[in-house]
Image (cartoon, rainbow, N blue to C red; front, side, top):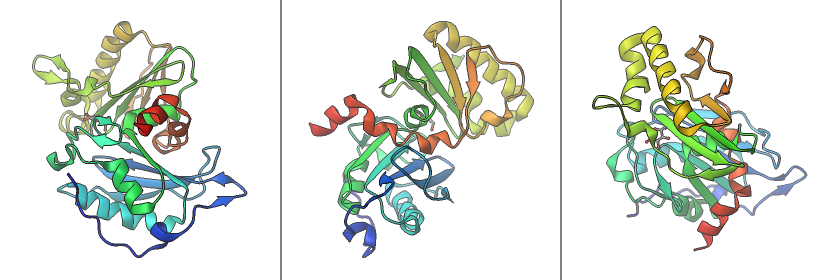
Amino acid sequence: MTVAVPNRSSRLKSAPATHTAEGTRTLAIDIGGTGLKALILDAKGGPLTDRAKVATPRPATPKAVLDALWTLIEPLGDFDRISCGFPGVVTDGVIKTAVNLHPDWKDFPLAQTFVDRTRRPARVLNDAGVQGFGVIEGRGLEMVITLGTGMGTALYIDGHYVPNIELAHHPFRGPKTYEDLVGAAAYAEVGKKRWRKRVHRVIEQILPIFNPRILYIGGGNAKHLKEKLPPQVKITSNVAGLLGGIALWNEPGLAEREKK
Ligand code: BGC
């Protein structure tokens, strides 16, 4: 399925790739259920621009989201490649699910759309997967849970990503899923205190199943967690969602899949 993106006569399409003194410039994009964010990273993953942000348009169809994204990224300047985190299952750069966006995303070739549009290589991964790359140590089994509009899950073994683990939509209590209980809608519905208790229960449930060396909790709502957490649990900065964009290009498994 293809969706026409608006015609841009901008420099993004025509400019040659830049190899400045800082080296490769990576445009890191985070597509979220609430906001779209982007910034440019230097070769070491440090930010070269401010983080640009715009609300996710509703309905969040591919066309509406891409239109908003082009407006967001245009002022950021040129870049050599794109890394994008997407809030759903992503296989070989193609979107498989997008529970918090719009059904039209199913089978949308997002990585190829970026390539066609910008003439730059692009990699797209589940948003929690990208976020984790920004925080993990690369040793043993590390796990990431993100608490935002939805609940993201990511697993890494010695720094290698296990794609598309979707705890969010697994039943947690009766027919209610993890995301039903600790997603942003639940936070708004039951308030901070009850939401925190639920998150603690989620952590208690997850730890003995996956036994991660470290469980990182990220996403916009992680800042609301206060009570003492088990020693292997770490709250991470929300900025990691974009900083993980560099690591996507060092992951051999992803490169192999891209060549197919
Ligand atoms: C999606 C996940 C995503 C998470 C956070 C969930 O609803 O199914 O793929 O990582 O939200 O955005």
